[in-house]
Amino acid sequence: MGIIMEVNFNDEDKYYLAKKKVENIKGFYGNLTAFILVNIVLIVINLMTSPNHLWFYWPLMWWGVGVLFHGLKVFEVFPVLGKDWEEKKIKELMEKEKENKKKWQ
Image 1: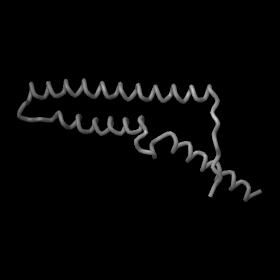
Image 2: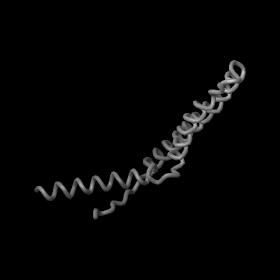
Image 3: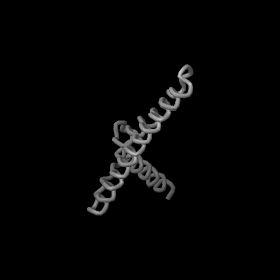
Image 4: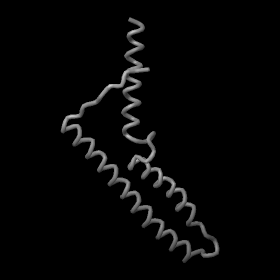
């Protein structure tokens, strides 16, 4: 197996990572707000124009799936989608590349 490299972030790097995380959270809440408001409007339009033919649940359902996965990624509920996993995978690939170069030298 490869060697696990320890990453030491300085304060500037930590600030950048924290700022990026806050921006991602803000983006999620923007998406969630739009999802709620637009779907309320779609439900009202559907019920006022064709109450016998309900279609509002289609955009509600599919956009809702997108919002759900967006939230799971932003709040790092799935380890595969989280930043730690990405960093570990990058390190692993970099180490493999280093080992491959050593083999051919």
